[in-house]
Image (cartoon, rainbow, N blue to C red; front, side):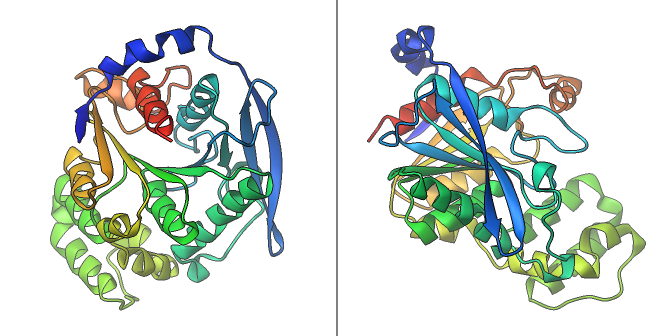
Length: 315
């Protein structure tokens, strides 16, 4: 079933939202070998009722912290997501990735990194939730976090899974498309490099135009990432899946969401009109989209939380 926005659901939640609950945040750490990773758990009110579904939120690509921010953007998207879910009675966990925010001192050398390291770190926070007594943990991954999340959901047989603005194709296909659109002058050489890496072969000599993205130190990570097909991972997962995609997302397309939807019969797709990649409501002006990435006070698109809560309520 594909829903184009969730406006019709608003009435069913209005009374609940009027009497929305406040939230309480608790900061905690998990240990990974010699490293410490920091996270936050947001409870509705001051309650730590573990009978309710808890949502583990996994951030997108790059040095993104638990709030959805990094050095070049501050929009508080994931902070707002946790706070909005708490208003409807759902606790959540967010965390700072390695080298980011409070986890800044946790490092793995670039040339030792693989995509699986992301899953291992996310698993630490999943297991923290289980240790706290939460028996129903739903994983929600945003952007690159969608792929990390579905791998973890399959590994741990999570209660439910939510993909928010997640790619439906292998990263090699996504990168080719990005070079086609944004850097056609180096498209052909970029495509050759991508094809070589996708076959598992490293490249020592690169054009200066491509070095920052494909530098040798990060190639093990890229190669491991390229081996994962999101569609295949969604097919493996047997519990309910919600796929949420904004129609104004300039980074991940509606077609990607439809690819994921078509991968499994138990996937529900919600397309949200006027929502962009950082989960904000925007108009047609490209400047408005760009500015929303650095507006920490702009709220989330209201239909996003309604679609998520509607999905969580179907227990």
